[in-house]
Image (spheres, rainbow, N blue to C red):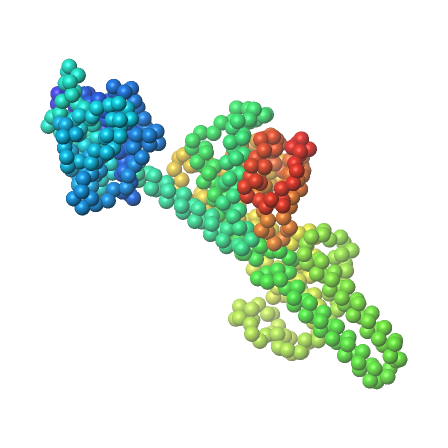
Length: 558
């Protein structure tokens, strides 16, 4: 029955303290207990109303049925409904309260012909129940928007007889409802801000992926691998993982970190990230060199024809001389082109041959200064020399090839011993980790996400301390940070959209990772879990091409 004023105020203050702590499940329990104390209602229902006007049952309690449900468990009772203007038509009580901001208080619900009783009839039939009195209250938040509905059924007197909800019960229920509205509103705001944060993070990650036509969905796929491996690690009893657990906050921090681990790449030029050949900048400059060889061949042909006209030697000798020059030019260009791809590591003899080839010269007749931007013109130390015809090497390192931190010199880049990235470009790529850390440190993450920077910033560290940017050892890295490193490596190795490498078979990828485990690159315990749990297979079946998936015997890769 309704509480005395002092007792009710005291109970209301206790409920308010729970609201301040923003513990919604605890507020629900306290509010329902207090509502039942003042009304002795057999049933209490709390509905939420979201921004899309979707009414959803969040909590239900029926004492006589020994029924308590929360969250999605309530779908068996009420599937939810999108509310819209009824244009004078009937509505079920909770919908009517939300739409009209009205209290519905009826002593006999089935006697009220103005209501749509379909949900109530369904409930009564489902549980062999009899709803009689009903009280429905709209919950209005601080922004004057309806955020939910409180509904109670079958108030009872001291003897257990069903009675109507009295004005005093209604008044006290409204005070409790005001606090429930605050909690529902706060919960809705938290969910909205959480969705905004995640959407912003996903937009940034997709923008980084979209920046390059080749790195595709890297930022979107690393979270998948990280989640799969973290789940397997929690379930494992191998080595350091035996007592490894992750809290709800740890899971969320890993999720955010895996989406943001490459956010620093927004500062890395596309041509560096996507550099498929050694001479590539905005385009592959091998074509310029081909044109120079074409000039040399044409010069050789002209020289041959001139000698024929001058009868300096017999025809066959001149033809042999010309054919020899053409063969040498073709062989030299083929060699330069092979060096450009970066597929085969260069030996000292290869570098010596490149330098020798670069001594071949052709005559340039046209003004090199024409058609340049002001910045390009400003980078030329001796413009007069470029305005006049002059001899130029078939492979060049010119002063203007030094651009900021970059060296675009042709010989310099062709001499890269392995791969396509030169020293300065590698430093720029590595710099994205530092930029990522700086960007994430600048964000005011709440306490529960304080580990995002650690997790995201360690994906290029190595357990032997030879990684970057901080040279952390395995003992200095958390398990989630080491999970991030493996997820990043596995996605990159299995990717089929990188211009600088052909797609690898799954067996090739696991062999490389096994070597990385053996040489101190990745954590051995996590790698073992990665293989034994079949994380690699679960991911491969969903995200890599079927022709990359070959037969794997896990024991061979441990």
